[in-house]
Length: 627
Image 1 (cartoon, rainbow, N blue to C red):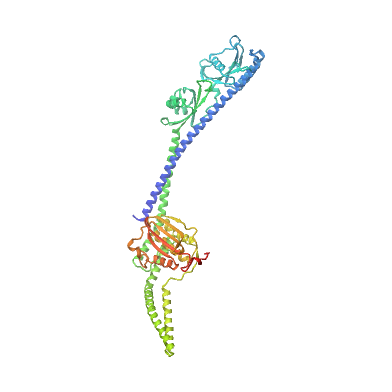
Image 2 (cartoon, rainbow, N blue to C red):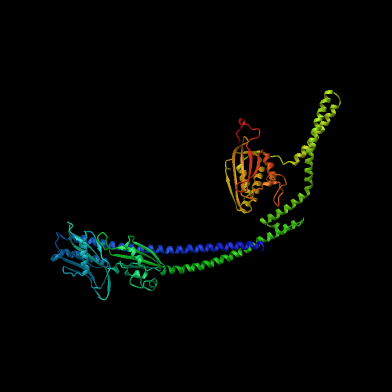
């Protein structure tokens, strides 16, 4: 399989897996979020309806409290209401009944026994009707009057919601809610009671306004529906009987909740795919009455309908993922073809170079991207190889000339020493040979100058010394290696090289030193690893110095070749001249420093570069401030 196909297959596989993972995560989070939003909306809606009912009941309590105060003020010393007071009070009650359509009857009873006076105003088909002293009182009103007389003045009690036959049509059932409060004289004695009778359906006529996804209901202490959902949408949501506990199948949860103190109950019913929220409203003060009637305000939201929406979203997401996968495949095919063509051209060019061809060119040379740069670099490398081949003979001659120069200098030193002895002897004797010796010494000096020039030719160029910021030098060298570092997924750590003192040296040569050492460390970690650069100022051999440590986690240097790595032309790589570390060592030494290579206890190699801050002749008392 070609490399281009491998790249395409691997990249496409990674892309498809990434798209699938993103789609699955998006679907999962979206499903959970939609369910949570549906439950939260249900919770807020039920709470809002419960607050409305609370406010409505507070309004009723406020109305009966005001009327009770007015009724008490009309009583004088416990006497019954006179005709004028009854007429005035009847007008007040009539006005309230007209204002509150849910109020069906208001009854006022004072006194006891033969002094008992009952007065009421009620709504009928013919309008409001007031009944005087002889007003009839049914059993529900009698019960509420008795309950009210047990209360302290100012307290209010409500009855459970009672289902009774309509006073207009006996076959028609109505739900009635009674509220009662005592009437007390100025001295605090309870002298009567005031009772409101209310049509529960009219009182809550605004409850549970239609919503497309929420069904509202109201139940009593036993779970019997007082307000229940109707219509096909609500029927699909499970309201099939007259009891919400049976409809929802929440008997055990209801029992625990009704005995607890938390007014809210939130639960999911998986078998019905419903989310349910219940809110308990107390109709009496638990301190006043041992058995407190309650209203249960509830709502349910169908998760099945939400699941249908999620299925549609899942289908759309799958189609989008398939479309994205197709676009990625097309893009990868085009990119692979675009990238593989110059690679094939460069591979063919490399094969021709290995076959020994001399005149080689490639279409990739004309490209304006990295492949073109690489092709031009290979062309320059080929030209350089030709130049190296031409200079091999000159290099051999140079090495031979250096060797001869060393040997001749030793011989010339002996000749020069003997000529000086002869010159001194003949000058002392005063003969003519002194001039000949002088001429010979001049010729020896001339030959020494020639040998010195030959040795200087073989040595590296002189350094251009200046005060150098090592922080900046190390940073430049590290940045230049970043492409290779990133390509091999190497982690770089730095420590201590942020406030280093300046050293005297050649900035260009020092950058070259650290670039070579970083390059060797990177090449020793082809599969990635850790590259640590540490630097600190310290005293080395009684001189202030800076030590830079380049630590890698690569393959390390074998013990058998550790002593030979700094020798010229020694290398363990298939490619390389073996002069890198030799040049680095010579440059460090030319700065008066020291290079050592040692094994890393954790694996790899530690390259230590010690650079002095002062010259070798420095003495502590002669130390000067370094700029």
